[in-house]
Image (cartoon, rainbow, N blue to C red):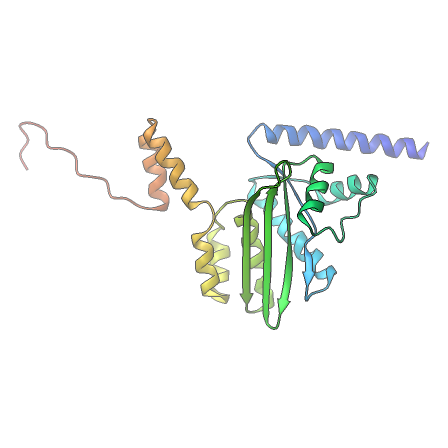
Length: 228
C-alpha cells in the first residue's frame, strides 16, 4: 500500500512538472540538465557544492528550463543509473536521453596551485553537437570563486553576465572580468537587431541597439524653403 501511495505521488509530481515544462517550452525555452561536475584537485563534495551553485545561477538567468536535481536523481535511480563517474559525452548524452531533455551541460572544476579552472560544455542530446563551451582560469581570493561560477552560468546559456557580478570579478581579477564582458549574447543581439532593421522594425531595432552601443542619430534632412 505504501509503495502504491509513493508511486502515485511520484506520478502526480512528475505530471505537474511536465505541465510546467511544456508551458515554458511553448515560450521557446530549451530543456537542460546539468551533470555533476568532475572535481580535479578538489574533493567531489566540493565539486558537488560548486555544481549546485552553477545550476542555481543558470536557473536565475531564466533563459532555459533546468531539470531539478532531486527530480533528476529520482529518474536516474529508477533506471538504475549512477550519475557519479559519468564524465564522457557519450555517458552525458545517455543521461540526457533518459531525462528527455534537449541539451546537457557537463564539465569540471579544478585547482592547480593557487589557480582554479572551470570548464563547462553544453551540447545537444539529439545530435551530440557542441552548442557552447566556457572555460575560465581564476587566480584570486577563494570567496570570489563563486562569482566566477555565476558568470559561467550566464555565459553557458549565451547571455552576458549582470554588471554587478562583473564588478565583483573586476576587483578580484580584472583580466578575467574584461574577457567576460566581451562574451555572452552581445554579437547575437546585434545580428538580431540588424535583421529586425532589415525586415522593417527599424525604429525598435535602433532603440534597442543604442542601449548596448550608443549610436548618434543623423541630422534630419533640410526641407525645401528651410534656411540653416
